[in-house]
Length: 95
Image (cartoon, rainbow, N blue to C red):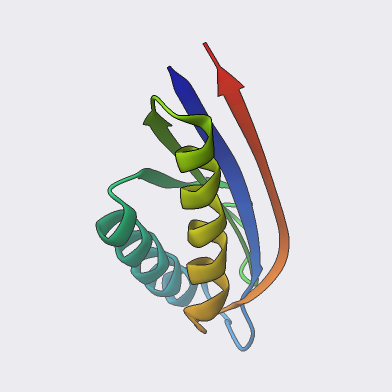
């Protein structure tokens, strides 16, 4: 079993409230979750208006496939255009 986990950190410009941030983060999470059928959630910076940390995980049986899907996930996370990506990290674990 191979598990791919990662984190994407966004900077949300022109966001003045947690309500506005929640709207953008929810849109990002739903698009990524639906497109990749992955577990996606906000994992940090919950009280900061202009920053969001999104975590995700994927499970499979081939390391190359998971690596490819994680790369595609990162590409889509950047291409959404809802917020600026400022950091990304990933780890692939074989169990």
